[in-house]
Image (cartoon, rainbow, N blue to C red):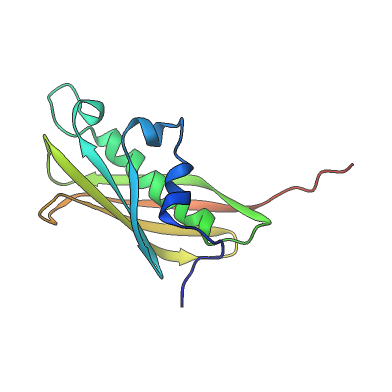
Length: 144
């Protein structure tokens, strides 16, 4: 059974990136199934650190993008999610190509969520592993 509580398509997800850091870094959503969301990011000048390797911060942006969007897709319309904490372990350097991030839930609670993000290279080797904790918030009613 799917964890998603809001309808979406890959096209609708990619439209949310317009004029954001996500678009600037070239992150594109490319797949989803009942309990995961996947996106790609190029390893190039936009995502390099000064030594010409994938910047760890760019990997964290990919991880947070995936965990945050996935978290918000699995809460009802009267709720939203914001990041509380993120960590990342950078395993393998990359100088070029494309990385793929895939997020899956570890915990989907009423007040918190925890998501695991695995970022791999084009040969499916682990580049970075990350975990994000999300706070589940309720939209406040606006008095008219």
